[in-house]
Each structure stands twice: as structure tokens, then as C-alpha cells.
Image: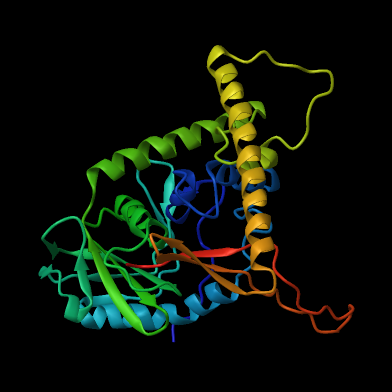
Length: 327
């Protein structure tokens, strides 16, 4: 079984696994999160920022599965000289980018087309020749099988790894729901490479500014939570005059909030009106031209058993569930 190697890249630089956060495509991380992580590592003078590597159970199982996924990939693709434990980072020759390989192997110049029966999918082109050494990346997910992996399951990461290694192909093996392995084959994507290069260079410029002047040039916030984490305190007695464009955004936000309140009031009024008619009934049907077109459910909420707190009996839910019936 493959040993868990742990993190080998340096948080003071951008790495391939962090590219998805840097590009704003991650569900878990924003560009500001990535910048903050590198600044934390710089401040500590260590390769790793604090508090970023507590594994969830799902991630822990992914590490356990990694060796088996890589071994099956190598066998299914008939790869030669597989190296499934890479303990040193791969570093780009000119770009401040590095990465860690799950594995690599020689493709023996074999050519593949999509073969769904074998669980092999060629992405972005009709066929691919695995010429020379290539990147092997293993993923495990509870999601249902896909015909192309979600961007968070390695596509952007392996483009960065190919840039760092000079390899001309990459394979992502995704184990879905612990029972189906699909292998996705990629060639270098020039458009993605240009985007990665630009984003990494911009990221490095921000890090250099912090190193030399202790000034943090934050990215525009992607969400309200991102903004609150990025600017957690205010300077007293400070005010700002917004630009014409941002002043228009204030008007749009005010109008949107008023519209939301109106919609919420409408939802509450309609809900209580229908609930009053339903009374003690759990289910009702809405009709149009004498035909049922929707089912309305007013369910019971779950009760609560008595543990450290008092038991709570089930009660009627505050909301209705509406199901539009198929023709």
C-alpha cells in the first residue's frame, strides 16, 4: 500500500493544487484565502501556513485509496515504469509555480480514444497519444460518475503539473462512490496555460509587494463572507466617496433588498393563507381546469430525544413543500 507522503510543496509559493482557489473556481477557497495562506507562511518563515491541514474523514479515505487508484490506472492504461510515490515537488523553470505528483509513468506511446466500457475518457479531443512520461493524479469522491470531472477534481491541477514537468499528457483517475473508477486523459491546453501563467504572475506580484513593503494588495472579494474575512476591522472616523459606478451598485442593492423583503412578505402571506385552509391536513392538491397540477405538503418537523437537553415533540413545519406534478 502506498504510504501517505503528506504535503511537500511550499505555501510561500503558488502550487498546482491551489490553482483552483486562485482562479476563483473553488467551492472552498477564494483568491484572498490563497493569498492569506501564503502571507501566513511568509510571516512564520516556514514552508507551511498554520491550521490548513486537518483532514476530513472523506479526505483521509481518499489518501488510503490513492495507491490503489494509481495502481489500477497504470494497469488499465498499460503504462510502463510507474512511479507511485513521488516525494519531491516539481518546480516550474521560469514561473513561480510548483506542484506535487501523486504518480507518473511512461505512456509507451500508446494511443487512446474514449472507451466507456473500459472507463477511459479522452477530454478535449478525439484521441490522445501518451508519448513519454505523464502525470498521474488520483481522486476519490462521493459524487455520482461523470463524463468529465468537475474542475475541482483535478483538470486545472494537472494542467499546472504538466507545465511544471514538461510532460505532454496527464491522467486523472477518479474513484466514484468507492465502486467505479474512471480515467480521464488530458493533453496540454494552451488557453488554460496562458490563464494559469497570468494568474500566478499576478499572485507573485502581490506576494513580492508584501515582502518588500508589508502591504497586502487584496483581490476583489467574491462573496460577503470573503469580504468580512479580508477586511475584518474598520478604521474609525474614516469615510469613502464611491465612484459613479459603485454608487449605481448601491442603488441596485437597495432595490434588490426591497424586492427581497417584498417577496419574503408575499411568501409568508401566501403560506399562512394556504396553511389556514389545510388546517390539520398534511397534503393538498392544487387544480387547474379540473386537473391536479401541484401537490402541497405541510409536514411535521422532527422531534428531539432527551439527552443533555429537554425532549422536544414533533411539530408542524413552518414552511410548505410544493411539488409540480408531471403531465
